[in-house]
Image (tube, rainbow, N blue to C red; front, side, top):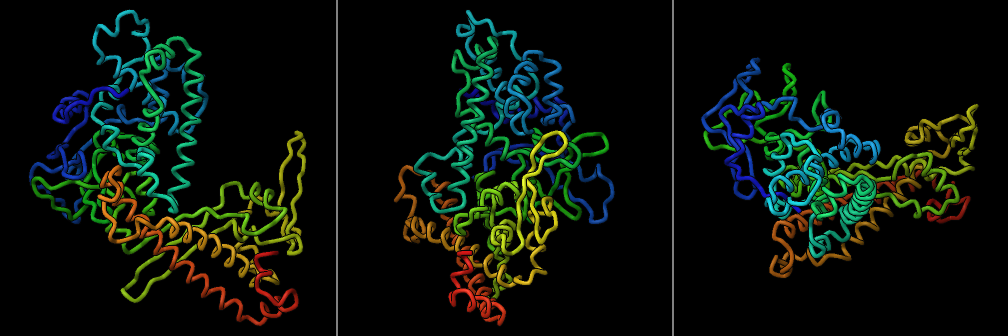
Length: 497
């Protein structure tokens, strides 16, 4: 259940009450973007301007910035929330902030429900209101957030074959687990059970929504780290064309500043960059849109590396030693109409292709406290802490080019499989397809999915071709030919070993 939204025209009063200062700027509706920040009068900053005050257009006091430290301070004021926070247990910054926002959502609902519905409840003393209890009512409605976790099933089906298909599924599974944990724990605390669950004040859709709000509005501040900053979080993205940036000033405020040499006319939008080098999939996943202006020149993609491509009894040990899900990072850069370069990296693949006969060993050792630890040895050297550096470690190996050929072949197979999955779900790739062919899909979701599919198809096709070229070069090497000839006269041995 969502609290009623406040009209954006009342934001200046809320900002004034909480010490937020707008200088020659205001938040208003932006066509096709929701809310945004615009300049009220002509404003310019010289290239050599060293005065921070001349370029500052918005300041937010430290007290209303939301991060883990702020949640801990709130817990000191509200002993009931402290109990809830401790019961849920220590969480990563995101989960801690989501729990706080979930409580503020419930408080906002309670504060704005009819008096008749409050009668007979005993939770009126639960929860302490703070500036965020009201600010969340300025945030977008769930239907206006276009991140894929909030897409309908019909809309999510458009992502089949893309890198976001598995990412969205994994995210939804994680969100279910998180929400179930919060509900299970808070249901055991009477006051929170009554506020959150007895009257169905909050639901799983609220948790999905708050996660989307956090991911799409969280900033990485220089000193405070991951934080949500009211009002600045309404500034839209413009990539390399952004005319402003945020920072923390000497007064411990978060300030929005115009870039040096920038001139903004009255009514012109103030923008920041959400990240110039982020892949299209990451932009869509976190923010609900793809920046076509930046992705047309530099395109990148992250694909899971499938270890089963190389049958190996040591796969589990290698995965444990590596310590994180293996991935392939691919980028495609268009330098000119005739020149396209492809780069890729997959640290795990370089570990995966090394076998015992190549000098790789695993051992489980026990320390003085009785703790057991997996150790990795390569050529009799302990490389446990360098499991992600096998690309470097194997460079001096006698079979360095053979190992490289194994890596290239395995990575190419992974990317080829991904490309074929994308092509197998290619109805959207038909230029004749329009939104009319998908009546239950929002137009914005349709266009975002089409753009993502085209970008990832270009990247995968170019990467597979580049890997084929490198594989052909390696197969021309005399040592490689000799090795393959001695073993099986067939290059398939590269992937089978």
